Length: 421
Length: 186
Ligand code: SF4
Image 1 (cartoon, rainbow over the protein chains, first blue to last red):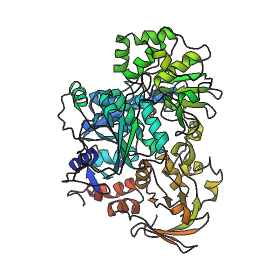
Image 2: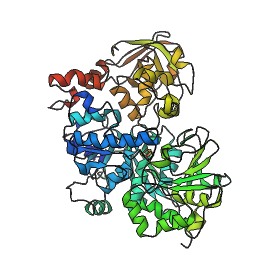
Image 3: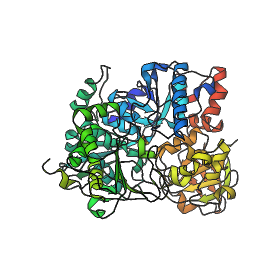
Image 4: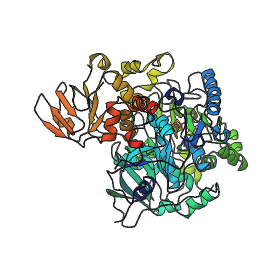
């Protein structure tokens, strides 16, 4: 009987011939575990050691400048983090301070590999690594226990097959598909399901697009998102590391609880309005909303694809005098590529703020929103207080929409800025 | 300590889509001086954006009855910590966000998915739950409801009051929890 990619990955990781939804598996991941420091009591307080210090990755992607409290507390936190890593035997090459958002570093360094279970300590957006064909899950509070025992448990979830047909218009991105589908499924529409993204649109989609479409599975309640690996995935991994891996894909006769089919050809850029994460409408519904702040970044949209499309919109333009636009490239590698392609120059000419690579404004860690602010951004959440003051209004959109809105001083459809350039 | 075979208490009924960082444990209240000093402190923020008096009204052993996708959003364990800290013995819901369920179980707070629960329980009803047999009884109305019983390796965690109390008990004796034993449990 045919099996889904998720069932095959879990059977292999759990050392079982085959598994079905509802079965429990007990598994160890071959991939390193990033985010030591958050998730359960410190290992030192348990009188225990890592089952393998080489599997631990220490990083501060959330810190930006303020997530540990004040700026000083953040720096104290960073210094402590480095000492702790050394004391726990974590190799220096596994320590990432101010190198970027962990979920981007995971892709750039192939911490997750096709066909594996990837366990990350940092938050629910670890699912973004489903783009590489891994079953990407979050350990959260269980992290210290996993780093001691080297074992976790999992109930095999059901899978939804998401078939994407047609062709995306210029200015409509994989994030818009993810938000549109969330709007259709609703906030409880995929509780404990796997969102398996397939179809010609996925085959044509860049790796950055695949990471983005898996990034926000949690807001529909899904356990994770996954894109079965193809040649594009294999080339991506092989160009970045020489670790062995065995890509797994779904059988043609695999069983899915439901199959959803969408044609994306007429899909418009989507906008999420405050305060509910699942109020999703086309950008044209909100084009009169005036804004005072805008930011591009976060683990959703801070990759080179996102920088490129923002630059195409901003090229030769300047930001509206009533608006501040902050663009946070997600990692040093993204900064280097953006510099190489003249993108940073476009951002500077347009009057953007370009902070160091981190989660930045997503959680209000740097340049938070004040009470009067109305902001459009590429963040993952928009509940009151998410990016600063409780009263600030947060709209969500793709990087092109955010850039176009920053030019006009109000929420704007980016597609007219992209024709011809 | 909670007896997972005989949870007993009053029902506090809430709605659908309770967000971990806004509804259950408003994370913005906990920044700066508001930061809780110890685990008990988390309880004073539980559900206050919905019912500011909830932490004062709820009694030890009571239940939270929730609708769809309780624990919505990020995987922050602060939400189940807040629920457990104000004395709640279990959350019974129509459906849950799995990160919320995992974190809850690992801190020793059972989360029971029981579709139809909202139609069978009113505010204030007296309930009894048994995680091993998978039965919830509404003592006020006499209705009995069934759910998938908890497997033994999760009951081991809950009976110890959470994953870390269990580890602190087992590790010094050179033992590991059931789910980590070799050969793997079936
Ligand atoms: S960018 Fe935002 S959602 Fe992503 S990991 Fe950082 S804080 Fe979390």
